[in-house]
Length: 344
Image 1 (tube, rainbow, N blue to C red):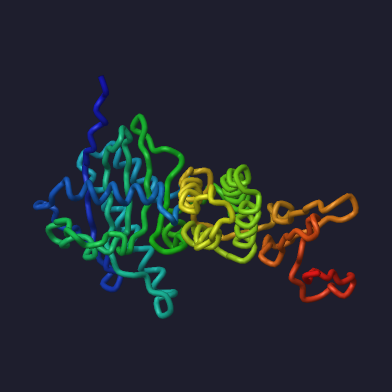
Image 2: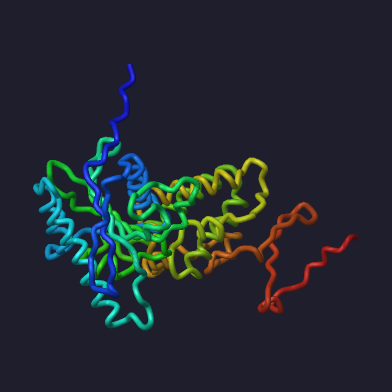
């Protein structure tokens, strides 16, 4: 007999309007809120924190004020004081930031959501800076039906709780392409678990391994797609899963009918969701330079070296029962004899 999936429940949720221009925090009245609507929204944000296209894993510093108040909230039955202090910490950080940078890059006005909930057997706490009006009727927190939630602006921090203690690892996400330093460093006071070099190495290795499955079916298609992957890592400055898939596969038409571009896209996205690397980081190719270069043996005396991964200028053809490689060249071709392939 199959066991039913653990029921999702929401233990508490509080929302504070953060108004840096008036230096005030206002708790939003949730007496009429629908807990199920809130739970749906909270679970969506939590899912984005773990599996979204712009996410990173981190850990709180020992001196983090937010960590201190989250620990206090675990033994605070009402959760009033500790959560309020987190909201006040965000306000303080925003006021200070805007006083220094506001004329050029003022922090967008929004609200802080803090919730403790259980889903799929996990107990978690979510902290999120959200643009409330994009999701809810502010005062009553009724989830607006039919409004695309993906277009909302928010930043999240997800912390799992086990045995009434916070896990060391936390999950961070942002609807922007990269996670705001103000969010992860200034407010949360945390550090990323993997730096750019580590993420670049892990991502390139994992995605290369994913594409290697194509080589079993069609070496020609694998070489082209692997070249696109290499080109992406050498030209892009910031890793973005959607952009990577588009630039590696895009509208590519395989040479082999056995190669499915839809499946390749799906497999690449699955690799990005494996949790083995972050999906938002600055690309640093220092640790993978040797992996980016490719050497193809032509015969005992000749090797073809490809530095950037782009093989779109290299072709193969057969002439008089012999195999040839043709390279579209801007220079160097004057060093070789001409081959007349015109019809005899």
